[in-house]
Image (cartoon, rainbow, N blue to C red; front, side, top):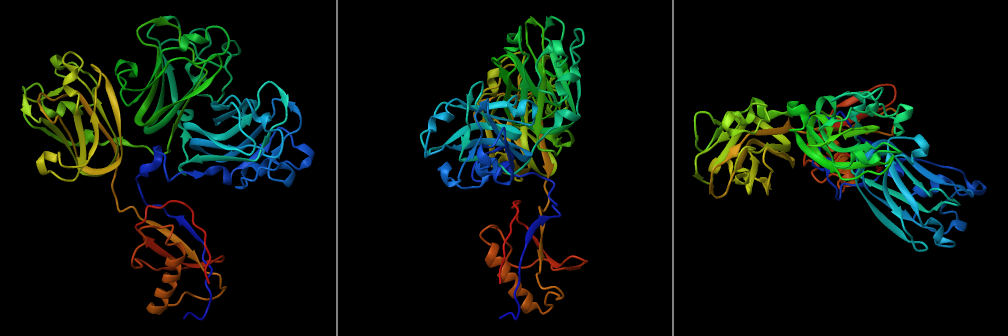
Amino acid sequence: MLGWSLLLALHLFGWKDKSLAQSDFTSGNSEINVALWGVATQSSTMDGVGLASKAIDGDLGNDYTQGYCSHTEYSLSPWWRVDLQATFLVSSVSITNRGDDMPERINGTEIHIGDSLEMNGILNTRCATIGSLDAGETKSFNCSGIAGRYVTVNIPSVYTFLTLCEVQVFAAPKPVINVALGGMASQSSTMNYGVASRAIDGNLRSYYDHGFCTHTNSERSPWWRVDLKDTYLVASVAVTNRAGPNSERINGANIYVGSSLEGNGILNARCAIIKTLASGETQSFDCGGMAGRYVIVSIPAITQYLTLCEVQVFAIPKAVTNVARQGVVTQSTLYSAYAPARIAIDGSLGSNFELHQCSHTKLDQMPWWRVDLRASYRVASVTVTNRGDAVPERINGSEIHIGNSLDNDGITNPRCVTIVTIGAGETQSFNCGWMVGRYVTINIPRSDFLTLCEVQVFGLLQDDRRLALKITTAFPDANLPEVPESREQVFEKVRDRIGQHLSDWPTNVLKWQIQHDETWKGLYVRTSTTNTAPINCSAT
């Protein structure tokens, strides 16, 4: 038995990992209610009782008279807002309606998510409109990864009260930032004062005549582009359309993400097609972690003006690189001396085999192409450019494998994806979820030719992924015991208390170190865990 008590406060610090978590752009069990750590406000407060903070207290009680709900005064377009303290990719928002009286008041409420506080946040992307909620009902609204720091709930254009008993905002606990704000914008041409930089000034105002938007001349395939100055994994792109006349001009615009400037960037992988965007509306488009330095918006193949009032590019603030460029490539056979494997990592997105822009095998049984990255990497995504001059359908059914084995030419490694189809000359990005491997192999599991015009592999070097836990002691002037048996007893107490949070807690202490300063005495425990959430606990 230990002759003293121990109070523990654990925090993650000294993060040594140079890679990112697999859940950065995915949803699932890793999501948390980030509103619990937010700061809430609202347009007004009824009787000083219905405080905004009551909607993020974690309590689903729905009786306003018992103090469970926020409540505004009677006003035009009342609103409530939570500042999440950082920008997150919001997968869903759950709303709990008032249960004791007048539940119909919430009908027609809108949920907006974004980084702007203009118009109290209601200019941000709309996640959902609440048609109706039953008395006391909690309902979840899918927001599909819209990026934002602020979640605003408002009832537009009517005089009414707004009552919310709980607002839960679910997101992976990995903040993102708008990397476009530090970028450099350009466009195909500039009409009057509609300079390209106006689309990355952080302002969601949408009237061109007031100087808020970009504007090209009328031309064929007009384009706008932002150089992010580094390559990022782009989670989403939010576009704000022009308000008023001619807002329909943006319909059919394409969003491209990639690291090539060929064709003014429109040869890069396409994130989305803007089918339609209402006047003055901001809409978010999920790019699923596509890698790129450039984000391009273009209206292809027609003569038109292009006007953009804001383009926000949300990404985790850690740059990645195309690690294939320094790799060593090989393939199952060589069709001709003009189509070696190395052409697929030359950095060009040209897609004409006849112009010697693509690799090409002979007609093989299960042809393959492989790049040796020369070290083990955590691969976020693989981008493939298909042949554009002829027979693009040959790539259909190809598989991308990533791993550290050369057995069966690398085909036995885990599969990232099966390529269903890629259009002629098209570049497509495939999310590989941080698969680990030195070799990236592309093969066709049938008798065919394999032609690849470019393969880009975006990732980060794999390392030992260690972090440190700081453990502070509550007794004021005592050192942690130096006797190994006593140290093991301390460790067992820590392990028993937090083991439920760290599934791969080590079986032995890798390193102990006592640190002294004016404020605390403590020890470090080095672990191999990848858990990144704060943990607080106490034990005696």
